[in-house]
Length: 140
Length: 114
Image 1 (cartoon, rainbow over the protein chains, first blue to last red):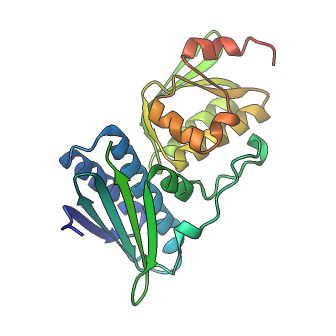
Image 2 (cartoon, chains in turn brown, orange):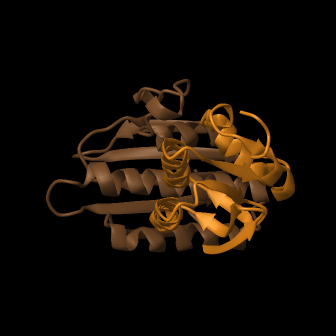
């Protein structure tokens, strides 16, 4: 793995969500990401961080969310580490995409979209606790 | 995100500029809900300047569509940009809400029999 070109760590709170989004916007500008890559990375950051803020850290004080971005010729990789209880997004069930408007639930869409717009999504538990999520987007 | 409201032949056109995400989706929902509660139940979202949405944005759009339909109207989308359309499509939303290539066509659609 190459050296990260950008890293950030903030507490996983709603107040910090804009900071994570600004970080990924600035990083995309720095690496001159194409529009498709920029959209995918922004979406992935928003959905994963929001999930950690709303669910992972919902009990007790919010722990950290650490993000590192690696830029290579053919791909961009984001690695997101946290100290929340174990949760594997790769195995999370897909949402209901077939019900009509009245009965359509909206939970689970965020992580589903991440798995669709990113080319690779890998999960491992961190030690001694927490999670490590690796997201890869191949450049156009 | 900026929202601009205008009337077109009795239809409320809601121009959405920028991003509808976790930081702005609630504002959009509040604006749309307020219009519906005031009796403006036939709405068109002008998405020509909407350049990003996430699951939070989708939730607010779905909520607004449900609310408008419960009051006998609808929220229809117009001029959706390709990256946003892709997200709507991935989420299965293009199968449950009505969308059109431009605002005029969306407005006229309300005149057609259901």
